[in-house]
Image 1 (tube, rainbow, N blue to C red):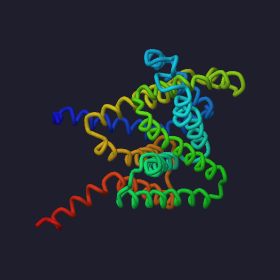
Image 2 (image 1 turned 90 degrees about the vertical axis):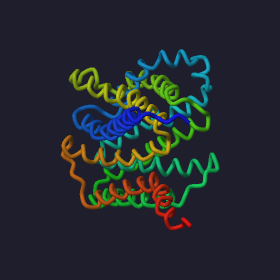
Image 3 (image 1 turned 30 degrees about the horizontal axis):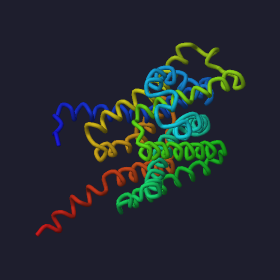
Length: 307
């Protein structure tokens, strides 16, 4: 195995930090858009209009006749798990509930779905650390859900349910890619291009606002949705995983709830309440346990069991 140069590893760490910053920041940025005139339909259309057109050449080169080589049935399932349904549910949630809820609930749900799905599809046996981490994540999710009911606002609860549904779909996406051995960039092109089918529906029946809203505002959110989240985030993540390895890369997702929650304060003025803070902290702790628990157990067990 060729050891990576320190400079290359440092660059990969910077790339991973850039990716989690993009994914964490999209929650307050998207909620900001829904609070200033754009609808979940607008944001969904912007994401796939930009990304779909930019990635169309890659999709064509990969083979448009058989959906980039994987078949139209599989392509449709991949597009459903990370395309219009998932993005619309996420943006609908952000129009109803605080951004910190989405930044915590979705990654937490992805971890749970990933562990359960790996058991069902691949016969994986989660380690004790992952089991404990998932239990802590579920406790954190329960706290955030309870925080929504305590406020007495049904819209917050509905938004949290949207985040749960979006996270469930998002959690299926990497499982499908692994099962069918689809390269990540090709899969992204499939999702983006197939999601272009949403645009006629949006244009004809969903009262588009992107044509009447401030142009600079629309372009900024189109760049965030289509370029940063779909293309740049995936490329940065893929590069980091290739250099650092999957085991190291999985240590970074716990930063997503932290970034989303912290950025929600200056961008939206949303300060988390006590119960919500406990829930966010629980999800972050659970994600950390799932990512680092096995390593810590080996570290502390080694000296104790050494002859």
